[in-house]
Length: 166
Image 1: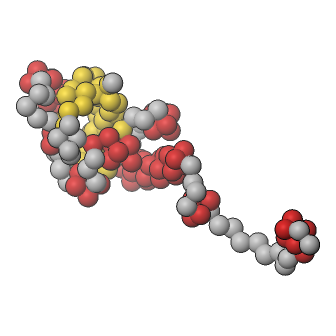
Image 2 (image 1 turned 90 degrees about the vertical axis):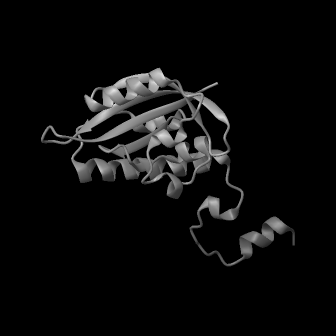
């Protein structure tokens, strides 16, 4: 009896085992899992705070944009998996801190000032910034910061999209 015919005679059992549990998952599968988790969390936050925002979050995540959400005091309340990969910091190290922890001596003071002024006025902005990874390595990025408003017209949080410039 050859192997193939022996398989057909074995008792068939059906057990659904996720592919990633086999240890042979393709990196794109992990990207899809991370994206799904991030989208679920964004939807939860949108409902929790009644945000009036309609952005293509799935597209941003699949195009490797990092997403950061802060409260009005600019403390990080949530970050996407892409942001963890970009910066090298864990979620635990980032939550409760301010994004300015990523800035350093090469970060342009004009950019910092522009960001502060726009946030104080609850105005969206786009800027190029030099940030630092946990390792100390410098990286350039484009950021877009959007104030988030609830269904009563009150600003509640800021959302930042960040993309590394190569």
